Length: 165
Image (tube, helix red, strand yellow):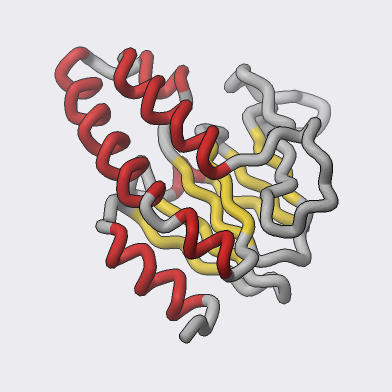
């Protein structure tokens, strides 16, 4: 569990910008994670409170992985397997952060169940893999890539989706 939290923390540190930072630097992320820790539904809205809200109109890559609650619900054996998956995912995704910055693609990683970007909401429980990336273009076009990949895989996927030479 400690290694899982350490790796997740490192990836957040590398890829996310704190909401308190100056938003004038175009190369930094200005994504705001407004999710709550609770997985309980809000009866008045029909949505869960475990939601990451992101402004649309930008090129964005969102990495998703299990939340603390999802991780804690796993058996000891499942946690061991998940630690390896998340470790590999975070390592290889961390290797391509410079590609995001160079191409002005914002990046964040979340454990939130719902990822709402503009008018589009993704429910990660509908994905077959526990980790993956959601890519969104400024025009709203999106693509989801599920699972762990190497840095070479991630770069190829990102270059193809964003038409980067």
